[in-house]
Length: 194
Image (cartoon, rainbow, N blue to C red):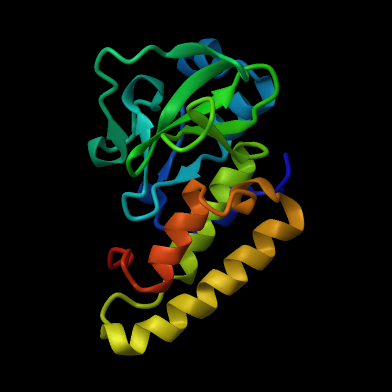
């Protein structure tokens, strides 16, 4: 894994009910990559005030309903020019997939040539990005005028940390995370009170 995150680290920064984990038996046939399945089952991914939702069919039994999304008739594994991708969940409006042979994370994108954008080198990078977005967000009780400089500083810190380890999230100037962080810097996505 690119980022050596642990379950303890996530739950020391976030309430335990804001970290989603997969059921390993449900995730293995969809996600494929053994290290990705282990990370998703043992460490998990931050819900990040609703930015990320895990596909309901992959969720551990103890997962609160508000942290998952019903996949409806969505195919769990799709064949793309990038290989077989297993559906993990969603980031806002984008569907999130994990490449089954190596754990690279993709999101659907209307702007990408093949309809998918590589957004993370692995699932630990996705988890780290969501943790940074959630943990660096200013107190939601601050007024916008007071919070904006704090959001801008948070974006600078997030970008620096991510680029140092995994350039994929910010590689595309029109990509998902670049656009998200532009909006985040303006205070568009305040975190939920904890």
